[in-house]
Length: 207
Image (cartoon, rainbow, N blue to C red):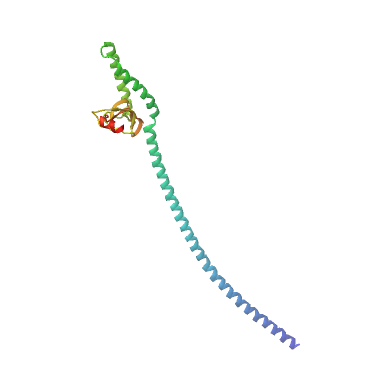
């Protein structure tokens, strides 16, 4: 009987010893896990902060690009609007140029001997002045061509004519007046251009 009791006591001590060792192991693992859990959130937080800073920089860069593009768009739109306003009446004025041509021809071909013609000429001249004043208000100005050097950008040569009074390539007659609208050519001047008069020596060389 005593033997059984002793055996039972030994078993209990062994169990207590085992439990005690197990508790120590569990406590060690818990401490390690606590250290790991304490370190990881800090690292994750740093990574999140770094990522957010990168995202903020990228967003700011996109904002700068969009702002620059929007400013360029506003400037381009403003320029286009100015150009549109400057040249919006171009087609209408081009049609009116034929009216001006006819008025100028009527004035130049009328006879000043007849008193009736004089009154008509005066009325037509006043009408022409009013039209030219409207042209000037819209930036339309005539091209000065007579006695100027021929310029293909503004003149359209209809013919050449020998002249001793003018140097070569000079506009000596204007068949139809040209016009500018602001800095753009509206219609070129139809002109006659001078050329040197042929000499007997030149004729011999040509033959």
